[in-house]
Image (tube, rainbow, N blue to C red; front, top):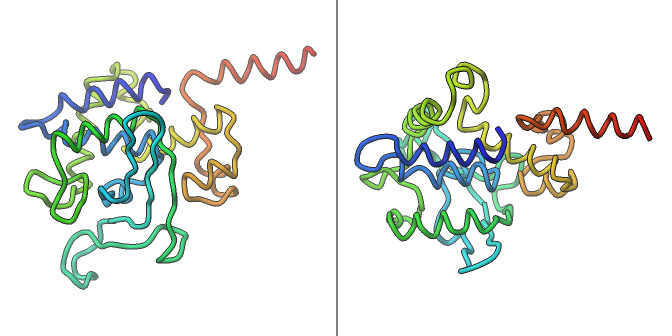
Amino acid sequence: MNPRQAQELLTAVTYVGQRGRGRRLMALFACMYYAALRPAEAVGLRLQDCHLPASGWGRLTIDMSRPEVNTQWTDSGDAHEERGLKHRGRQDVRPVPIPPELVTILRDHIAEFGTAKDGRIFSSERGGVVASTAYTEVWQAARLLAFTPAQVASPLAKRPYDLRHAAVSLWLNAGVSAPDVAERAGHSVDVLLRVYAKCIDGQQEIANKRIGDALAA
């Protein structure tokens, strides 16, 4: 998805569900798009992980995730288990600079919904950990609102995880170096270029023109 489509989807999310269900989740999706967080990293984001200045760029310090697991394999019996970062040691952290757009979204979210008792920014109405089924249902409903029937039937932004793909691809297409993108996204350069570098919707024409210009030079 391109930036315009991403913004339209985030807006559509706020209209989904009763009792503000979509509004509670919009900032969660925004973290996946503007900061390329994995869903489990966004779900586990805490207030103390966020530097949200009144203006300019901010920063998220990611040091844990809350993936969903089978309750019989956890010590606590919870459906979400705290884990370290993927592909990193348990004590490692990943600083992620975030643009002013996301800083504003997070500040507004915290002002409206507060935080859970353990400092988590995103929670269910009762303060529990946000389930993947909940945010996936909201995402699918938002696609129906924001997209044309042809786009809905296509793979475009099919899953919330595609927000992360779109973010990484946007950074690469914007000319950010692969090592810097890999550091922000929490991946090796090899995995980044092999798996996450996707074409942004509408940019094939731009790429074709650049190649054509190079051939004609």
